[in-house]
Image 1: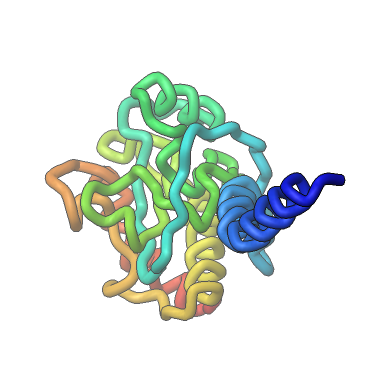
Image 2: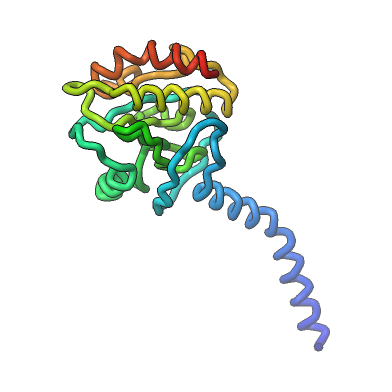
Length: 197
């Protein structure tokens, strides 16, 4: 090997080592977008949704509840994902979706920025309970699952369930979401989450 080639190879290898931590961190961050560790005591159905570009959330200190609103049908996270992709978003904006039978489905990966509450996505987890709660009522299975999920998330992120940490979408934005019939049940949901916490 010629001396010039040897020195060039040393330079390239050195530059590669210097950049390796940056590249490794990028891969880890990317990987965290596609994985979601289990929540103790809560069954979450994996959905394996494919997202466009996502960004990690650096702070979590609150949960925000939503409803579907435009239909009272039992839609899935995959359906909402398609709707949100069609809006030009990265994919479903909520981190969790609770079906009519109480099944909790994974939406957007838990530690990424959501697209569910304008101005508040940087520090919150979005939970959608399926239904149009302006005209229908959330059922008992949905409320039980919502309380279990809220308690588990509060334990995970280290804050207690309360009126200062669990909100409805309308608490932040000019919207009817999560629907009057769910919004009036939030204090009951918070009490149930606190008991489980």
